[in-house]
Length: 248
Ligand code: NAP
Image (cartoon, rainbow, N blue to C red; front, side, top):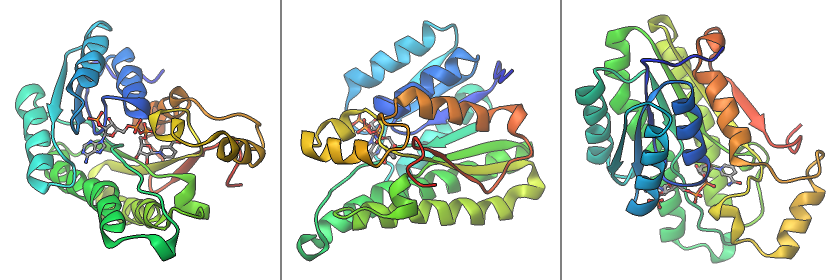
C-alpha cells in the first residue's frame, strides 16, 4: 500500500519540522525528493541525506516561495532532473503573530506572501507539467486556524483559509486531467514553529484538544502520504484535519 516507487515529489519547506517528516515519509515509500528551503542549508542537507539513506535520489533547492521566479525554478529543476513532478506538497509557512490592533502591514503582508502566494506560485508552476502527464497530486498544508480562527493570528488565519479556497477551486479546474488537489489542516504539532509558544499558551491549547496531546510531524506526514498515493485517487477538493479533534 501507498507505494511511490519511481515517482517524484517536490516538498516546499522540506528542511525542518512537518516538511522534513513529509520528505522522509514519501522517500520511505520510494519517491525521489526535491526539497525546497528558505535559508537553513544545514537542515536541508540533513533532510536530503536522510532521504538518500532510504534508497532514493534527493535534491535540496534553496528558494523563497514568495518569489514566483524561485518557484518556477524549483519545478523546472525537478522536471529536468527526474522528468516529471508527480506530487507537489506546498508546506512552507511562517507566523508573525499579533493582535489586530497592533498588527503592522509588514506582519500581515509577509505571512500572506509566504503562506498564500507561495502556495499559488508553486501550484501555478507545476500545473502545466502535470496536465501534460495527465496525472498529479497537489497537497497543501493549511491549518486548524484557517478553519476556526485564532486570536492573534488574523494574518495566518487569512492565509490558511485562502489555501483552502485555492485548493477547492484548483480541484475543480483540473479534475478532468487526472490531477487531485487536497489540503491537510494540522492542529498543534510539535515543531520549531510551536516550540516558541510559552508554557501557559501550550497548556491552554492542550485543554482544547479532545485527544489530550499535541500532534507529531509524522501524524501530518502519514496523511500526506495517503493523499499522495494511488489509494486516494478518488479524493479531491477535500480538507483533512489532523488535529486531535480540535475542529470537529
Ligand atoms: P517550521 O518548523 O517553522 O519549518 C518551516 C519550514 O518552511 C522550514 O523548512 C523553512 O525553511 C520553510 N520556509 C519558511 N519560509 C519559507 C519561504 N519563504 N520559502 C521557502 N521555505 C520557507 O514549520 P512547521 O511547524 O514544520 O510548519 C510547516 C507547515 O505546517 C507550515 O505551512 C505551517 O503553517 C503548517 N502548520 C503547522 C502547524 C504546527 O503546529 N506546527 C499547525 C498547522 C499548520 P528553513 O529551514 O530554510 O528556514
